Length: 560
Image (cartoon, rainbow, N blue to C red):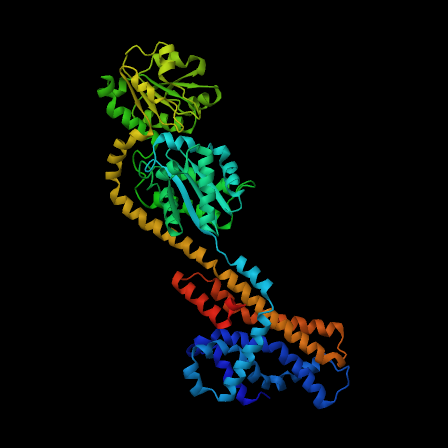
């Protein structure tokens, strides 16, 4: 039954030699589907003179007769391709065909221009969220600046909500540790978002923006993605490969996806990928071997300088730790590994120190409350501080008031941010004060040992970063998919409306009209399935961008 001349259009959707008009052929097929159905019904009614109550099933049989309508429907679907190859088309298509293409294109353009509100909505949806990172770390800022921005973990979500409250930032997550304060955020307008985040940082720190900018680093796009991968992998840490930062990034991710978190689709995916990348680095390389945490660096530093500062072997030094949190647990772990079996813990309550005593049965842990702080400090050679206090626990004035400034050699090692030990303690005779910035001597030694592992780790991180970037780029296809679907549905509705007017005298029942409606939707959905799946498929970034560019040009989606 099919007219032979119509068969020449079928290879457009299956022949790879016609790949440049593959997508227009899809529009050809679905744009004519509805018109063919109703043209068949109308044609059958006129030719056979069947009564107005003819059965819908009989009308479908007449669909084959209406295939001849392909020629006219084809005119619009190839307009974009013909325009781009106008010189070659003139030698292939008859002049009358070219004229019909122009007419069809003109008709559609008139219709598209009447849909400005829909175009504006799609334009807003097409604004992708780019990832950015603003912050400061031990590599860029001194501890006195970092401590002004430090946020306790319990308040990470409060801070991220405040950042997003301006409306310029769509997603945000805060990572605040001893060595870094970083804000990861996603926004469609980078300039406005950066201004909003900078304003928040200035407000929180109490520092002028000019001072902050000297200490801040700002990264966008792929650079921000690469940064969080290196952070999670331990390559950006003070001690390369330290494991504590991976746990902190994991907590950042978990907080971001909580009910009051601000990590949306993009940011939560990024942080989750970063955690996975960090795990790979530690399981597939030897970068985490040896001393790899701030706590272990503090132990190494005090061990290295014990004879110089105290004239006393490290193994004979009397040790005290102020605080009983995670840092203290790690500190005791590394002290115990060096054979030190007697440690005094000073804390506000007894519960956590007792838990540590139970966890380390081979270590003689004496527990004291804060009321006994100065008595413990006065009897200790090395005092480590690791509390969450925002005020100084030990300073020069307090040492003098409690009779500690007598000139006896003492080492104070502060691994807290904000700092627990004031700088003025350096004025006390024979007292040596060290903070996290002073751990760089240990860092230099460990980094040299891990250079080879860093290269291998970076290769793994690049794989993970590339996967995330490819996924993020795949999101750029969503607005195009929405535009194509809406345009296809518009043409379907237009043809349905035309056919409905023509069938006014056909007396089709409501049920039969619903069946035609479902048929038209089914044809459109099935024909669009292939192109939609191709657009969603992850491929090279360049290939994705080229595909979207071609599709937008072929169907004039950007001109709507």
